[in-house]
Image (cartoon, rainbow, N blue to C red):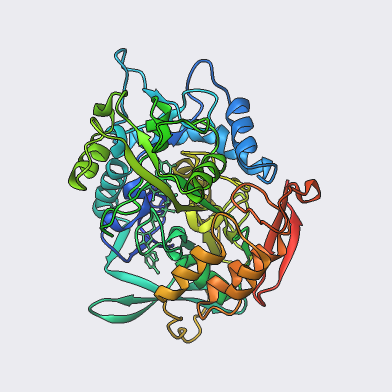
Length: 477
Ligand SMILES: Cc1cc2nc3c(=O)[nH]c(=O)nc-3n(C[C@H](O)[C@H](O)[C@H](O)COP(=O)(O)OP(=O)(O)OC[C@H]3O[C@@H](n4cnc5c(N)ncnc54)[C@H](O)[C@@H]3O)c2cc1C
């Protein structure tokens, strides 16, 4: 099996497949700190508390998803997430415990119960990726190709049979496998202001689409309401997790007024912040009254940026954060191209609908990574390999594309702006524009000034972008 990408989804998928006896090649482009997983500050959502249940977790997921989430995917996630947390524990990940030794559960926006598991407070992603990558590096059946990128998918007779990998030192390297799993992360760095590492440019979507797989829901980009505003690019966009608001942090204007329920779902909070900014006010996250010791890496990053959150409110604004859409997959991670799977943020099972519930995405990496690893084991042997493919187009967008997406496909969109984006040189930007134009309504993370109302006729309908670039509707239950 080939797994492309070594964030939470790729590492865990590789380890599960290897545990089941598969030989796995893990194609890992960049150092750990360049995955979104490394930066995850909140945690993993799992219904583990006594007063919680699969049903309540599902209800919150579907509510956040604005009647667009796929119910079967939400059920799979909510049922299986507690087992994945326990599996991670058995692999050696140490989650934070309360005084009685039980898992400490945090509260986050959109969750009706305490259900977010952390490791090292706000260092959850760092801990998990560090632990899983150490296990992958040691595993006898996992071969890690560091500094190597998949530059195109290898397709023969309508089936994905592997990838063309580019090694920084050794050059092109064709790799063949029964099952190829994309775990390349999201696309939020296509937008100018982002909380994501710069490599999150939708690489998996570009590779899969070029190879003949469908994409789904790519018009839904979640904007996080509280990313640091700073003159220095190194700090601008740094995310201050929802958990800070869960613990009592408040959003205030420069006049000191609160203007939104801080625990409302992300899309509502982000739009409220945007409205204040548009009205010429500055918005701050006030952490002065909370126990900031619970957020050590946020506090140290803010102090490095010259802001002391114990003494002064932190200036914030929305930033592109999470890609709900991606490579369209089944609940086992199968794409529409046989032999090709997608897991984690590059995939779209329909789970998140129009708005992801906080901390459901790490849970998704483990729940669907597990399912895809098991399913891909059953792919048939590759009988004979065709000549390897040519490298695909560069996954790096020109700076003008990032500006154009921010301007034309930001928190509020118009037909005119999206039509402009149809002329962008970067292919994925054009596909996003096509999808956003086809969704003539406002819902969750897709708000159109020219179609301000939610159309209930589109409930549970997902927009599929096929290989010809056309957008069509499918009902996913
Ligand atoms: C600041 C921040 C905080 C977050 N906090 C939380 C949280 O608390 N809880 C939560 O649930 N979610 C959180 N999220 C979202 C969550 O972290 C991501 O959705 C999740 O980690 C995605 O994991 P992934 O493995 O799919 O992708 P990533 O972790 O992004 O990993 C993708 C990897 O693929 C590699 N790659 C890309 N293209 C190629 C290629 N062609 N060849 C080889 N390798 C390639 C990349 O270099 C990268 O290492 C947060 C995100 C951010 C940015």
